[in-house]
Length: 545
Image 1 (cartoon, helix red, strand yellow):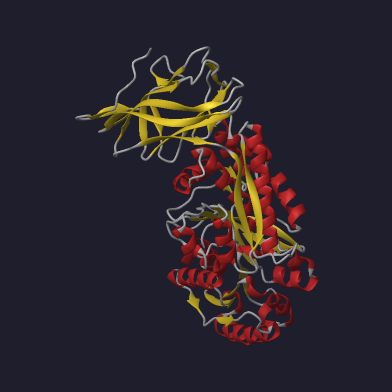
Image 2 (cartoon, rainbow, N blue to C red):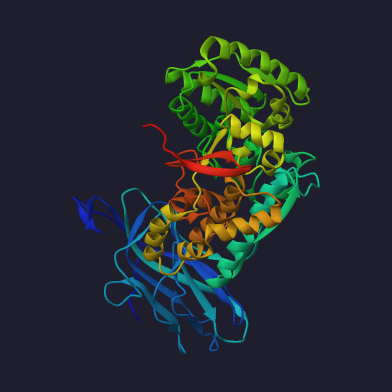
């Protein structure tokens, strides 16, 4: 029998070259154990993970027999490194114990050294080939690994099955509208991700629990948590999310919101957003206004957390670039849109007289869409430039109204939204990622095509897709892929893995690199306007350095 490594701790003096990089390491030898259930004809995933990035030099797996009938096997290509299949032959214990050299030089399934990040995992699915139940089997993994930081490695099981995920949105029973649209897009994302899991042979699924939070998000979140749900998608509204962030972080819940992207909420915590925050988008819009020849800005917005943040970002950048921001018009929910539009008309007339109509920019958030419908009745409002948020993009009601569509086209209305994964500019990066991962998530996402995703979301949400609905779709994949990478439902592990997953996932919104606060980053924004009563993308805006 192969000699079992005993526990040892060796400090390497000087440097050690590993995978082409020289750095000082602490090399540790350890034996870690896991009690694997002895259930007939059942596959159990043994999952190795470590607290720090490690380099594995040797890994032996020992699965002893409890009785003479015990027999174990490992299917070919079933071992997963960071959620992706590893090429290897099938393994069989025969009539004895299973001794498996997983990582070794020349004789292991995987060549050493093997780099295993703290945010990743090495999953080894062991199948009980006999038909007799017995006592749990004490599995032992003998491992020799190096790390720059003091590290500990663990051997656990991943049972799979249905993993509950709360899908939060204050729909109040509505089948249309912003909240219902993003919820439907999220559910499409869950369905597609589960289809992907079937394709790659995984034994678990995301089990979505759609929850109408109109009665109060805190109660909904705490109710889910008390029933064992620690992963959630949504809500899409910043003010709503703000009320539960402390609860989410205090209880180690992981939450991905597509669209609650107020900059005020950005923090390195358990809450992620699959859109850039309002500071990033607002800064880009202000730059576009200046490049468009506007020198005076009139903000008009309904006061709430998201709109306040958005207006602040646009105004601050506009001033930095030499523009002037007039005293804005702030209104409250329920205010009369007719009166607000009349107030705007007077202010805009004065600004146009003083600075020239071509120099004036009106920035309006969609807090009260009725305001836009009232604007065409005022001549002065139609003489200046109008700009909006990405929420306006694809809004069918704005272009199906003949008067409003003509007004938006006449004023050159522009809204920026994060660049989506549609179009020929994305073919090259998609192909590169597909080649880097012959079997796995990137190839599947590439095969779906964003156009097909968009059609399905449009049909089910009853709205032309925009960045919000595509971000909702992607949020399901970000969560699912983080579970796949870690082979775990431990929320701390999933939070740690999210950034790595984002840098590798090329989804409906393209590459999903996340910033230090867990918000989507982007290199470009799409420029959208209205032409011939249709939403039309006219180009890309690249933020200034």
